[in-house]
Length: 444
Image 1 (tube, helix red, strand yellow):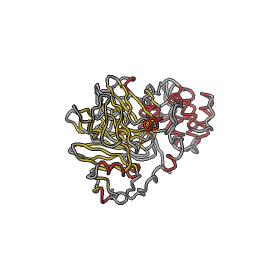
Image 2 (image 1 turned 60 degrees about the horizontal axis):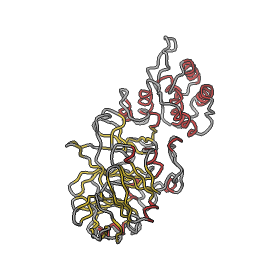
Image 3 (image 1 turned 30 degrees about the vertical axis):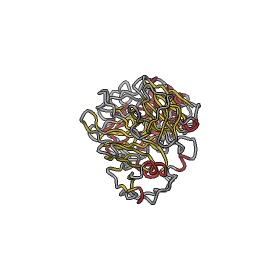
Image 4 (image 1 turned 135 degrees about the vertical axis):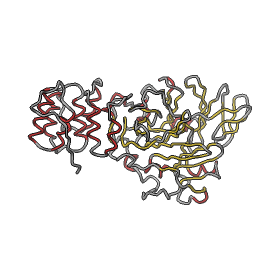
């Protein structure tokens, strides 16, 4: 059990502020009933918007035995909510209210989470700029980089990767003629891979909870961004952090959302990646390399081992606001996710089941006309079709347009009379994508 001690609270005999201090909330974790009663009185007298979020956050840390009764009583008194119900119900009540956080909410989070990992304080220090609700940032239960990223990992030639079966899921990339496969069974334990493929510096981020593998270029306008795993989540989506400023970044958007870099127009470039099977990938790319099991970490890298229970149900590990839930698909139904720009209308989700039934699908997104080709393994690749309209493809290497023109299907482009470039896309769970982009178009 962690020992909590918070110094710096205002003396109880001093003139009371208009609002309770973060220490009034944090000292509830110390377990002294007399002190807890005094702090609860101060919270009661100076109750204001955002106070419930701080109390629920304390309860959600798993220390319900420490002053839990007093906390539950004031929540019931102030909101009418029975705090003995599950924490998800309490969070839902918080999220339904307009976002009016306690003026020192960031300081509260800074002091609370630095007791778990002192480095966590860097995310919330100095009342950081933010584009998201701080009360929706949840601790994922691990330390910073406690899920260790793989950096320049050891790889094998395809014929040496005897640990893989043809049906195992891999994430495949090809840049400048070099191909590499990242098995899901490995990335599920690491969630991030920093690598160089075909001379391109990439950061592959696998958000296990939201089912997305996204590959970003780490270079933007000549600057390199070294990213890691923050230990926190936003709407059950992984938050990254950069090593230099300790800003937290959205995985799905590739931009800073909390910290010094917010508002600077930073947006990482997504690169194309395909979710497929090992057998299909090595058939297309016999010269591919693939991650070795020699990662430097001891894990059970068996197919389907990591997060087995989570993947076996439609339940979420970390709840999201009810207003963002959408029952047009099940939470963990897989979709192909695409973004064409910054506008709400330029975001698209296509059901993987729909694409399996329509191996050639033409779709407009923003000002682009796209074609999506899905092979028999279920792997989908998206291309900027321009003025061309495609009618069929053989599921392997050749697509045909409505004028009878034949096109070679490669990872980088469709090549024929002109070159039609690949368009970035990735798979995700429906709930994760919709919670980030609630106005997304859906094709199912």
